[in-house]
Length: 118
Length: 109
Image (cartoon, rainbow over all chains, first blue to last red; front, side):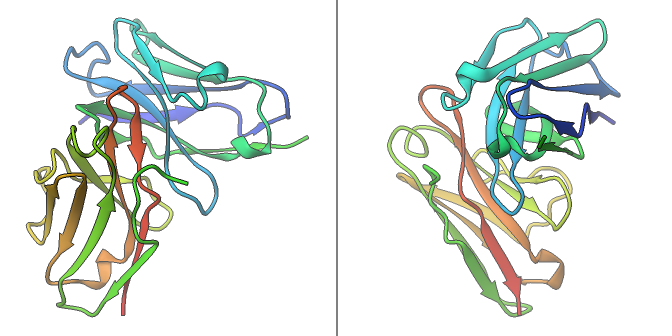
């Protein structure tokens, strides 16, 4: 069955760029029916959608993060990636990747904790 | 402050029926479908209800969703101890942004 797995550094310094990759296994990221998204959850808080990408490369981002976010896709590796620039402590969170269609995130990665600290 | 408003907490005793509300506006819930997620402690969220009232395969029929106007509700009947979790509603808005509610912590007394 389809699985998603996040990977990347668990610690990022303030003002630097957070970079995460989501590897899709058990299925193709090039499926025409689905988008692929990033969601984060600060400790003890709720969920926040960061942005999503289609396999063709078309993207859409949360307006509150748009100026700092880049999401890209590598269909040859069955991966999509997140870059968040100029991070601060407020970006400390568990970051999830997930598959979605019509806004419903039906398959999620296990999540990866990223701490922003010097 | 989330655009979709949920009560921060809810509770019930085993066997009871509980409902969790989600209030939005004409530009989100009013014109798009609502999804619900269950997040057990320390785990990733799980899709519980999609397209207002559809259950993914494997979700018990104790869970049901509904939508009316700019509000939606999740109902859990025959409450069980394993239902203790955080529940989130979510919907698109008209600009194709995905909005989440602030979450409701359900306690089974």
